[in-house]
Length: 122
Image 1 (cartoon, rainbow, N blue to C red):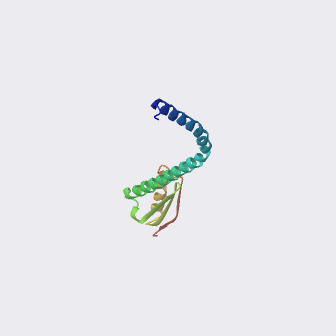
Image 2: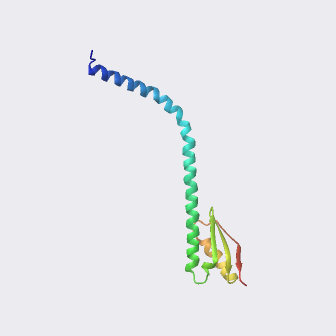
Image 3: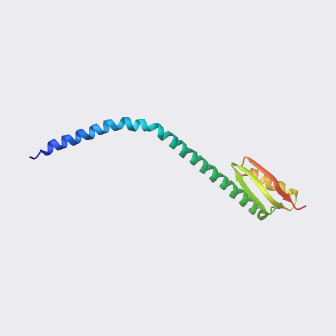
């Protein structure tokens, strides 16, 4: 005995409608668990932005040193962590030391410059 296709279609639509009605509350109940995932993703993006900013700052400081004929940029090591630039290495004299610190402070994004590890040859 064959059932008409119309009967089958009505049954399928009814099952689908009931399924959607019952799934709604279940999906809503899962919504709070999505929030920690979104917060973690946002935090990861912020950390990535910090890393990119620090890398950019380091590159910019180093290239500024290399472009300045009054600085021995090759001898100065530059590291950046959360906007704080740390200079290390050896420079010829106090004037070069002070110039390196001043040039680093001019770079956008630099919050502080630590040059205790930047020694003079004098």
